[in-house]
Image (cartoon, rainbow, N blue to C red; front, side, top):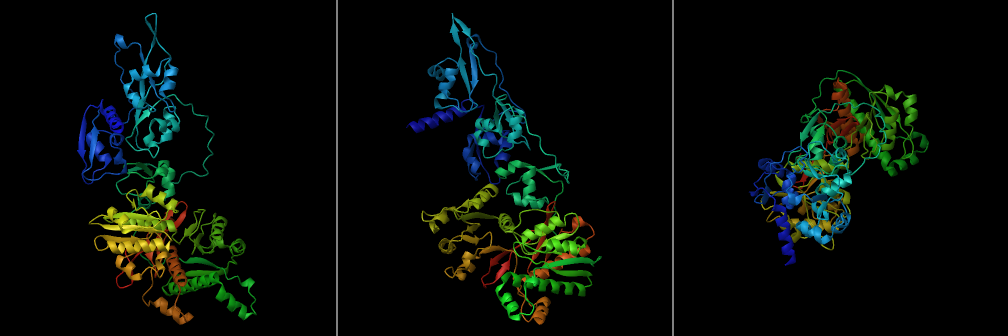
Length: 632
């Protein structure tokens, strides 16, 4: 009974001063922003009366709308009314963070009982920003004014591009005080929020001088966009020819996640849809250096058994030699097509700890080359970029995915796991489907990333023992749309539970399992390939499989007496793409525009101020005939 009474009192206190309360039935396609616009209120006003709306709107949901005549974008201070003789002795106090009824009563020399009598709503508790009426003491029948705070509570409507720090600084507050007055903004700031403001409570410390920027900004930033429904941070970075890191640097509030209706600053250069690169007639020769870790100085040339044994045992050497054979085949093919290529091969002498690259750069004048393919270890690639930074020589990383430092002359040809993840999610988001996910509890970073950037994804809970059942999944599925279910775990038992549950649900629902990277868990014998085929498993991959007996394969087999490995094919594809770009492009800024497809590899570069990064991947799906098909 007490709980019911409390809810009633809270409800009454929220609406007792409303000008007009209306009920709104949510329709398909409507958003909080669009509804707020229709009723001339702010999204924050709607969230305040309908907290459940923060989790998203559903058709047929009923919202309570309090109409208002407030002017957006201005600080609204409460209007002063003429005081009647009876209220001359009344003053107000604005509640600050940490204050209680007792501390306020003590501060003004009154009692808790008198304070509550003057403020009936305070019986249910007080919050920062609440305004309390204070009764002044009387002496000899005359009113005596007590000292009251010098500040009043005002309001501020959040405008595009504003940040919590900027608003707090404007009113002489700290961000902590601003969040205490407005707890709803702790998870992020939204355009249209009506914030409680208490000016003059904070004196900002003297700022330390910021270091002068090393270089001026290359692009003039003068364009803003409003985030539309279902847009994602990764998708926006591709659309506007930038990176996620650059977007966050321009819009620090994105660290708390992307939200519909946000106003974002973007580079003033919109990216058109990628077009396939048309290989034109070569108009210039290309000077190319290829660094291969032969490590010839470590091999005794007179010891043939030693060389043979090393080749059998050294996986890294085998991989790089296969890559080298593919590069050589590509050079032969390019020359036959009339492309002038001046290529030199050098022994980089690489191990994880050391290389001969620094010596080669000096002795072989590698700064005079158009591009250097290699080294193979990423730490040596980055060192090469650093040493060649003053030249126009491109440094092409052939196989490494793991890189930390960014250089303007770096060409990262291998898409990393983040690209696989984000490209797959963007592919799913383009479909008219429901997206769900089962994520291993220990993958906290992935869970947080999905929740912050892909808010529509529904997470499927696990059992107490860490498993999953049909009964847990079924209530969350859409009855008519395709349900894409992301699975991220290396536990074979959980994977087996998952696939068995989906096979049982496939008779009544459209369910498709998805991985965001190559998940080898599904390769275990316990998981039937027939079940994966029936469900049409979707998975991303850097390469697709070469099934045709193309001329390259026949020529390679004739020369080396074996079929080319994936590393030989990659050496071939990478070299063909790179040399053709260099030979046919006059404008350096256009060098990495467009997309090409090789025999097994795809090259679609994001060309930024920190180098070029390949985001060309394949999204594969298992087919009923036991083959794998590219679906993007």
